[in-house]
Image (cartoon, rainbow, N blue to C red; front, side):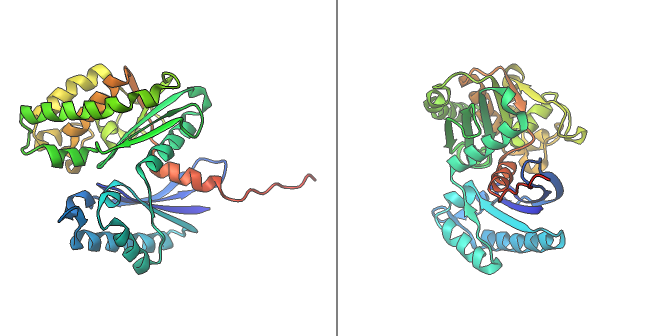
Length: 315
């Protein structure tokens, strides 16, 4: 069947159309996204602004039309940190649901961690053993660990790259004092959760998803995205530590010149690197493997899992 998934994230709103059926890998057929940066439209006590709501509603209408044009049979839509954190988030989704005839699901942070973990598990398989999955979004950091498809522990922290850049940095590049304060804050927040994630054992494999980790891996020497999803990509703790120092002393324009860094994400890459560096250090991970699947794929896989199965009678 042809399935459409609309991911309303803190940075980007993304429509992904896949051809998929139960027991098979989803094959991307069409992708359309726009950097709406909804988190930057929060005002007056964390209320999503009228302009932000209008831009989101217009994109959802456009996405529905595109999905229809592409022959989508089933359509799923979900929202993450930016809408979840907005004081009027539920009201906004209700208005857009009524306007567009949808039922947009508001995912919790734990939902994000669990579904991302499912995608990572399916990508690497059972032979990967105990997995630690890390994802840095615009608004939050998701952590999950386990040996099955359902993690033993799943945690979401308000340590997204966009959120931290807005809340902690006053200049570009950020002053050294602000970098130190953010580093201290991030490490304290993550350290509180390390015990929950390693309680059942150290991971056999540590895996990262998300744009932030992919960009950090690329500037550290991993293969470009043009070489396809099946090329092995990784990020070492040593390389990340070096680049974290460099990124916090560069301005956004200089970061945007680095390989794999998009101009729209360059401003928040320094904060993202601080979170990534702290996570690898505190979990004592020397090497992270990159996974091309993440939350969207987790949502797709979970949807396919609940489709009715049909057993053909023996001839």
